[in-house]
Length: 113
Length: 114
Image (cartoon, rainbow over all chains, first blue to last red; front, side, top):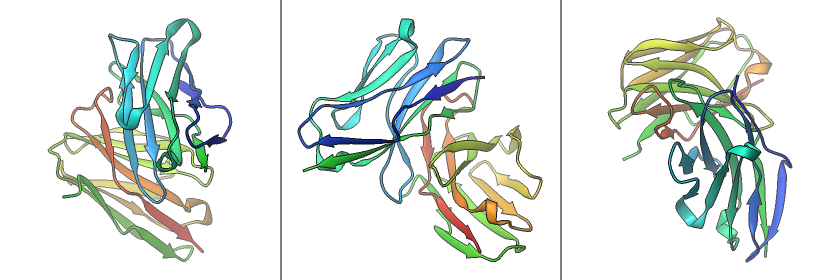
């Protein structure tokens, strides 16, 4: 079964500082990897995804993530945090022929002014 | 226009009651899902339908029964509600049944059983 590990349920970052959210996956087949964001009282919105091709993936709102097969990782970064980045972030994994997403437990990001 | 819409947004009910949550998508997608998000924000798939046919049925109590009258709608009916059913339920849809395409989520239904 596929799974995702996100460490540190709460992440505090100063406004203007680097945002780094770690995601490690487990998959016996080539993975498809996603980052979703959930703003308070809203549904999930796709930030970015990796399926095949370029391992550095750029998403919305200045976020990017890099797929590293050797490290089984898909960490999410943003060079400079903005107050509007305060939200819950979920990493998820699936694979070809699979129609279920396995989500990590999420990171609650707090941006400190 | 909202792509994936769920009603109601909030639902407070007593133990033992039966309730339904409705979901509609206007994206023309073939596949729809129900996910449950518990109090610790953990998301887990419950059901998946493709063109009105059930293709995923996770280990969910049979008090939960999904119904898909057409491929744009996937409703969730819950019988004999229990305290442990309190959660946020998300409906989602994707263009094809493989989830390498983007899944669009509704805003969620926060169910509180008292």
